[in-house]
Each structure stands twice: as structure tokens, then as C-alpha cells.
Image 1 (cartoon, rainbow over the protein chains, first blue to last red):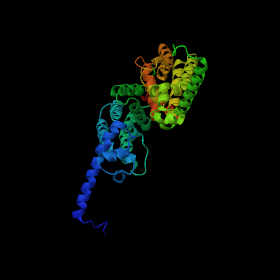
Image 2 (cartoon, helix red, strand yellow):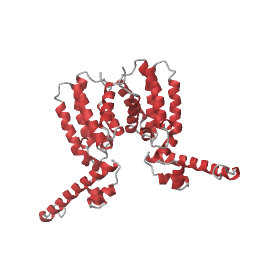
Image 3 (tube, rainbow over the protein chains, first blue to last red):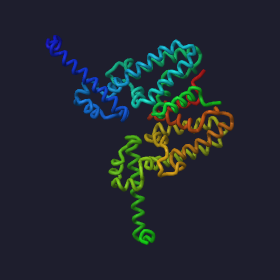
Image 4 (spheres, rainbow over the protein chains, first blue to last red):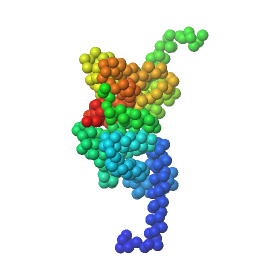
Length: 191
Length: 191
């Protein structure tokens, strides 16, 4: 009874506290991950947010859940771009443009590439993770390019997302190099 | 006079000590880097080798010098492979084969990709670093493929080495995935 019929007068401030802690944790995580990458210290993130490690773990049961929350907004923005590009005239160029935007976002935002590489952790349904959202968005553009006969049959969505990830990891901080290498790899190196 | 005219009876054991310390440091570095990657703790490497940090820094003035020494042998082996492949019949396939071997070596040996990405540190002449040696070896194969009209004019040696590095970083521990992605990128994704 006490867990279901919550007294609104005490529950609301507690919920507001929870929201504030979550926001503080996300802001702290963003700053520390921007400096130290995806392997940033969770203890430092909690300390910076002014909460204990137990509170961090109550909000984010593991590193993956925290990374997914930090980059959720950026990934959703890229998913919306994929939807827009589904309406573009040239399916091959639409796919290349989107992969370029993904690569540049990952190359200029520490921690994103590692987050997108991560497999399921059992806490979040795969389709709701950054990896799952991104794969879904890529799949639409890849499917359209394949249907138009613009992509080699053996090239899969996972191959293209892996390529974008690979390039953003090695061209970290250099969006020009990332863009150049992506365009070359999409076109191939043969004369 | 005392620094130049060294007494051989005391200098030799000191030189043997130096050699032993260097070997111990390299063995320790290999083990710790295999576990923790290129960012491994230098303090832990010194501790494991049974020497002080000052001795580590006397042998290897910085992280780059240590990484370069650890991977020197593997890189020299790859350079010899490049020389052999310069004699192969098909210049494009020779280049692809060598890039595949480089990618698989980097994908299965933690720390190599980061070492190959590193720029000059002022301690070692660029052409003697792992990066310089590898670039030289790649340059021979790229030049031959370009002369045979097998490579697109805008593709440079640095592009191809960057591609191999990018793929090995994102496919760490998975040589099959690394090889597949490299072959796809060299051929291009267009139908």
C-alpha cells in the first residue's frame, strides 16, 4: 500500500530531487566525458554532480546506460536528419551525406563512437539505445540506396555504420580528415 | 676527463645493467600495454620491471619512445613483407594484401594503432619511428600501384594508412571484421 498509494505532498519534492540529480549527473557526465572519453571515471562524475555513487547507479545502472543518456539527444537529431534525407532525390548521395554527418558528429564529440559501438547491456531494449536508434536510421537510407541499385549487394548497414565509426575514432578532433577518408572509402580506392 | 675516459672495468657491468633494465622495461611494457592499451600507466610498467621511474625515463624519454620500442620489431617485420610484396605480379592486390596484414596486426595487438597514429615527438627522427617506417613501407606499394594506374589519383599513402588504422581501432580483437571492412572500403560501396 505504501509503495503504491504515495502521499503527493512528500512524493513530489522527492521526484523533483530525483530529476535535479539526474540533470546534474548528465551535465557532469557530459563535461567529464568530453575531457576523458567514454572510459571517464564514474566516481568523478558523481562527485562533480554533488551526489554519491549509489545515486549515480540508481539513475544509471551501468556506464552504458549513462553514455546512452548523455548522447541520446545528439543521436535523435541525427535520426531526424535521416528521415529528412529519405525524401532527397539521389539515394546514394543522401546516404553518403548522412554518413558524413554521423562521422563528423562522432569525430568531434568524444565518447560517441564508443557509445555507438557498444552492444546490448541488458538494461535498455536494444532499439532504444544510441546504437539501436542509429542503426535503425541508417537502415532506412541503406535500404533505399540498395533498392535503387546504388549499393553493392554484400555491403550491409552494419558495414557502413562500422566504417563511419572507425573513421571517427581515428580522426578524432579532425572533421576535415574524417570527411575526406569517408568519401574515399565510400567511392573506393581503385582507379 | 672522467666523463670521457671511462674505466672499462666499471663501465662494462654498468652497460650490462643498462641493457638488462631496458629489456625488463620492454617486457613489462609489452604485458601492461597488451592489457591496458597505449595509455597504460608508465609507473606500473616501471614497478613491474623492478626499476624506478627515473630509470624508465632515462631509457625512454617519453611514452612515444617506449611505444615505438615495444612495437619496433613487429613493424620491421611488416616492412620486410612490404619489400617482398613489391615483387608480386599484381600491384593492386599486393597493396591490398599488405594493408590487410597491417590492419590485422593492429587490430589484434593493443597499442599498435595508437603508436602508428602518433606524430613526431622530437626525440626520434621521424623516419625511425614506427609511424615513419610504416609510412615508408606503404609508400613503396602505393607508388607501384599508382604507376600501374590501379589507384585513384587523389588517394595518398596517408589516406590508406589512416584507413587501415581506423579499421583496426574499431575492430579491435576481431581480425575477420577488420579484414572484411578493409576489403569493402578499398573496393568502395557503390554498385
